[in-house]
Length: 260
Image (cartoon, rainbow, N blue to C red):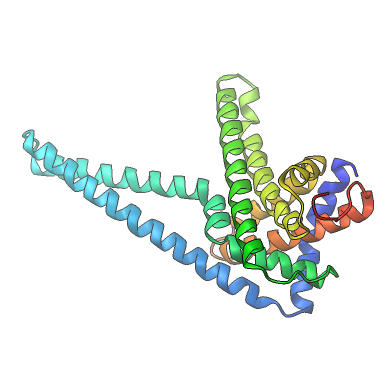
C-alpha cells in the first residue's frame, strides 16, 4: 500500500472509530481517560507551581540579602516563579503524549483490545503474565518513540539556522511529533495480535502513512480546549487499530499470526 493510500486510510479511520463508538454506545471510553487527563494536568500544575513558588521566594530572599530594595526583590522573585511555571507547562505539553502512554498504558491496551474484538478479531483470554509482558513492551515502545522524537527534534532545531529551510521547520516539527505518537498507538494493535517488537516496528515502518496521519489528527484534536483532552487519545487508539486492520487486509504484507 502506498504512503498516500495509507494517509487517506489513516484519516478516514477516525470517522470509522467514531461510528463504532456510536453504534456500540462506547461513550464511556472517554470517561476514564478524560478524568485521568485532567488529574494528570492538575498534579503537574500543582507540583510545578510549588517548585516555581518556592524557588521564586528563595530568589527574592537572596536578592534582598544582596541589598536589593523590597520592590526589586519581589519583582525578581515573581519573574523567577512565572518563568519556571511556564517552563514546567511547556515541558509537560511536550512530554504529555508519552506521560499519557506510560501512565495509562493498561487502559490503552484494554481499549485497543475492545476495538479489535468489535472489529471481528477473536477475544484473547486475560493472563497476568501476558498483561505484565505487554505493559513492559508498551513502556519500551513509548520510550523508544520518545528518544527518536527528541533526537530528530534536535536535528530539526539546528535547521533553524539555515535560511529559507528554517521556514518549514515548524511544519517538520509538527509532522515528527505526530508520526511518533501514531507509531506508538499502532503498536498497541500489533501487541494485541502477539507480534514481537521487531515485526511490529518493521510493519509500522512499511506503513509510515498510517502513523503520520493518525498522529496529525490526534494533535489537531488535542488543540481543541478541554474537548481534545477527552476525545483525542481514545479516538486515536481506536482509529490506529482499525486503520491497521484495513491496511493489512488490503496489502496482505504480513499475517496476523503471533510473532509474524
